Image 1 (cartoon, rainbow, N blue to C red):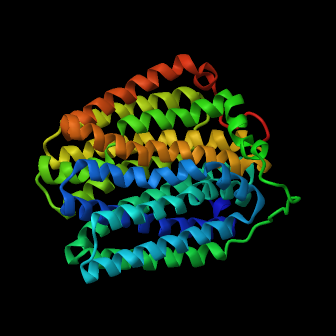
Image 2: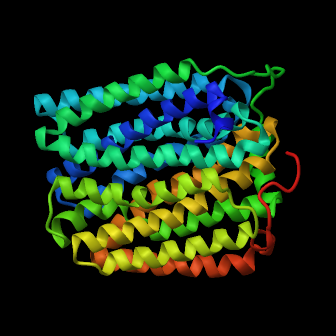
Image 3: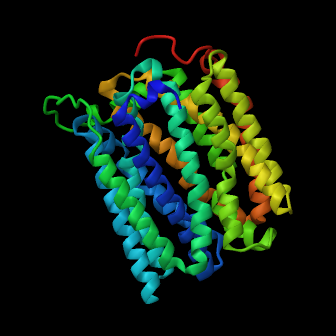
Length: 404
């Protein structure tokens, strides 16, 4: 880690909080996915879990952005962690007493989605307040390295702990969310109190208008939406683990962790050697590689090869994540970061949670392999189309071109 990042204590405390929260969330998703598939054996229901998490993000996007630009973002983030701790505790109790059901898992998925509607944009909007602009790309890469470490450890630990039962996983998640909440409450930064402003339609839509007028920002976040929406396979991993690769919860944990293994190596490299030139072309090329690796995963019938393909997809996605997030944060003024981050989080949520629903729905029609083949090819097509649709993004050279 760079000495310049270690000097920023608030950033490091925030980093550890995100580490705990991300690990807890990954363990939670492994447990909910496996438990849902055990209860219903339905690809449709696996997709519904993603849809139930995405819907609140879409409904609350304008409110979340306005709130984040008015109030202390770290306290909002702490409340989100506390809510998810409560959800995990309820799931632990349900699993322990034997009244967990499909309806309960879907209802609590809505609460998780509500927390994430505020959590994701808050995390994006806090980081630029903790480090100087010139350090931000390196800080985002280092943050991503930490998150990928949690994404590696979380599913693997969740899968192995699930052997002792769903209750053990959910109880562990409760403790980690509580730790994340306590750490976030200790993150201090200068919060500029803004004059009281009513939440009019004009103020709520300001973030949407800003994104629409900036071709680089719109191209970057919409690229994530369509590429990952089509190419995501995470919702179908329980099906691949059980029906294609013939493995158990431990194998599912390894599959969920595999993309993060590749992403971690790339993130660590980018935190030390940030991308200096041709950022736009590197971004679009990374999305193309992501699609090709997803296609390779879909066609694999061997566990080790599937893990390798997922690792490559994770490495390519990490290059895309760091470039996209750097561009969005550096192009956005501080007074707008909450609302722009909220819009960005909806695109990210759509690509992940809505992508899970899309995967489940197409798998119900085409089977898991057909669904992921279609998605991988679609991601490659999106990368090619975005070169023509967003020439300013493709031509972008340096990440930091002007002072934000």
